[in-house]
Length: 440
Image (cartoon, rainbow, N blue to C red):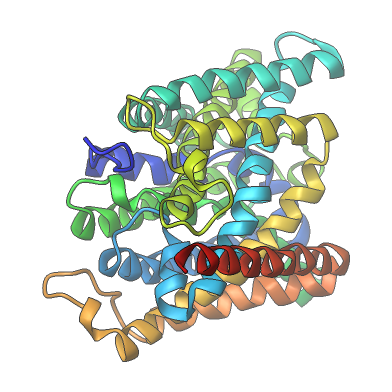
């Protein structure tokens, strides 16, 4: 095979499990307290999860049409290239390569190490060591091949769904609190609902990164959209089930004041053993979430370098004998280790939610651009977003809401995110000038 050509060896089930795996990480276990703390009412809290699910699914359904029309490695970056110009696509790729993927790798690894202290207290230094070891192990798995990484992720994803299912069933059957009313309380507010929505949408964050694997999925024009849709449906049902179980087991005050809601629910339902079980489930969940982030993150610099649109093109576009972009994976790991050592978990994750949703908004709008200006890409039999234009409008409105709300409530992060993005402009200009010089 060509040393610059990726293998299409990821099937529908594996791709679906990667969507589930990359989204379900720690949010479902830790966000119920902030969501219900924002809404101050059980009914409004559940509504926030429903609305968040609708926005996320609407966005996924919309982006899936782009994935079907443009089933190429690079995902949203490639879609933005074709629909809005290469400069916009490069800026998205720039923020993802330098910050988003390595920072999320670092954040998830730190979360894994922190949860690991439920069994062994290793101290701050030991947690950093564990975080780095986890990254190295998963990096080696992904270096073997995309197929191995995808298979391992599918196993981890199925495993993480087991404790979630146990909590849902146990909470619904054994729970005795039944905290489902009122729908709205005197303490509820519009701003509080907005804060709750940010928590919900953080829990759904990550699905867009699967678009980076379009060039490695079998029969991508059909299987890729199906994987996104099936995966998001599974996630939404799981999130609603967990929160219903929580409300059926704990009262509002307990939920709001609990830093580990699902673990506490498990202890109430099943005793101390249940708490340990959920702790293991969270470890598996985070571990499984890391796999697709590592797998898909390295595909962005590879895709850019293959087209001579990045720095050190030969280095980043080279594949190893197993057909994986080894150099890109190694660089991602190095950056992730640097982020682990800096300990900027909250700052980086808040920043990147804002930056990523700016580009997701453009991607959803891209469906309208695709249908109007790129009819040559609309082939017969390709997936098309249902209920057009209602679904893309819902997704775009939700994405815009996230950006505006972040800018109002965390202005510093938003401004910094814009600055980091714009720094990519001179880099893009340098690359363009270099390529023109070589072309002469």
